[in-house]
Image (tube, rainbow, N blue to C red; front, side, top):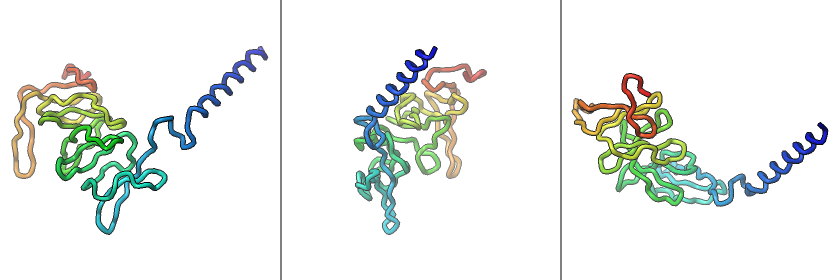
Length: 185
């Protein structure tokens, strides 16, 4: 009995040492970049990002506006020539972000809407990866694991507001698969 206790204790110590050796001094896995932190120049109203050591990685004014305060894997920024976009850590554009209420779409149920060639899809708010590729003419935010979408729809304007109209609505889950609208699962 005592021998098993020492074996388990030794295994735990070896595991912890291996874990500590795997991480670098700044707590990041080897090859992983640390976070970037949003900076705002209050005099000019321009935005940029710096690393944790204070080095500027994205200079003030490169993007018209930055919506992500802590840039880990992706950030949502306003590119004056393109609109709201998500960028990766190499500062490449990943995709366009759907415009809602004069800004980038809000995450809902862990996903937010994106656009490509006038089609709507969904991306994961935690890692920025595309969860459902853009393929829908209209798509509402996810709620309780499902979203209402249509392959064909019209946009009807009413003053400054607009609504989507379609006879072909259906529901999808977070993988993009159609689900029964009566159960929404």
